Amino acid sequence: MKLNWKSFLSLKIPVIITFVVIWNAGFIYSAQLGEGAFSGGFTPLGMKITGMVCVAASIFSFSVAFIKPFQNMVISEARIQNFSVKEFYFLALVAGVLAISRFTFPAIATQ
Image (cartoon, rainbow, N blue to C red; front, side, top):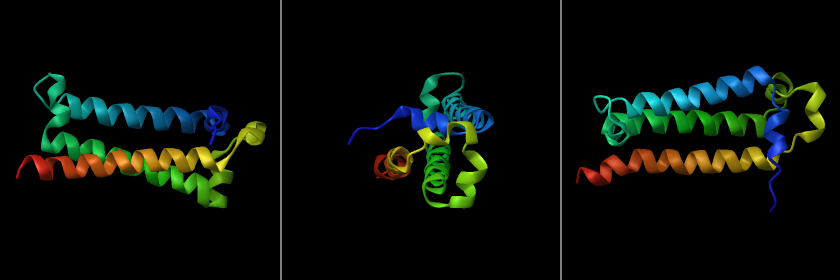
């Protein structure tokens, strides 16, 4: 399966910027929980925060892939020819697996 990264660019520019800002803000905030060190991302709270960011990314990606009215809202008319759902399925899968790993790791580490 060959993925076309241009499919992600079919989103409207404000949507792309919002996605990137929320994604990075969640990971940076969780990293800063370790008193300024980047070890905070591995604290139980940091893992939950990044897990929730990944769940949100997965839900967003599934919404783009499945829900036609949502597609009409977030896909740019000028770049609709680049849109393909398989890239958003892939992003949803990766974000979902990462979310599962972020939620299960603290449970394993505390036992």
